Length: 271
Image (cartoon, rainbow, N blue to C red; front, side):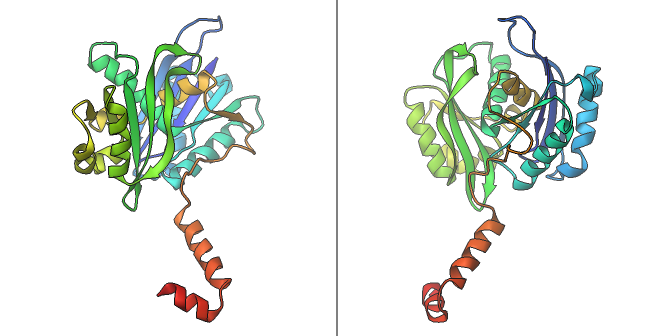
């Protein structure tokens, strides 16, 4: 089985291709190719080129893809919409399955692979991986994952803190509570932007990883999709996981709220 993974939730766009053995117990999906570029959130102009390049590196074409796995958030609203629209277009009119993969889980899994490579292989069970993405307006999208003693069918990590929007210091305190009993790593562009605030709340058992160690990975998205992780669905049903309402949605809600009040009530509420 061949799986294409698409990740555009941050400035970096990444497309990966993995292959899964047909036999039970065939092991971890094998990475065939990965292409990552800093698109500056202009993914609409570059994503299809990344897909073509990754498939070319793998020596494959679209007809050989069995599953398209796409990172569905939280993250950049525009980036998520571009990725999902592209993924839906790729599977339209084919038998290719579409799978939505939580962005923060993919970031945690990508960081785990890099940590194992850079720090001599194994990490102790219970190690906490805490990815966070810059959500702007002084917040981050964050979640926490724990390393399992034995990898399960869904992968080597399990979610222990669900995705949400946090003030950076609040997220760091959530991680600190977990790091009292385990080693913890905070990662992602949210951690890079708010590093000083986050580090001020962390104990000595926690570390903020540099940006390279926490880069998004299309291969990680593809691997989670290959295991059946995420949300399988048809192209009509799969939707982004925004976590927080967009600015347009907030403005519309405020306008509707003001319209439902009389002039006197609206004026008194605004004071």
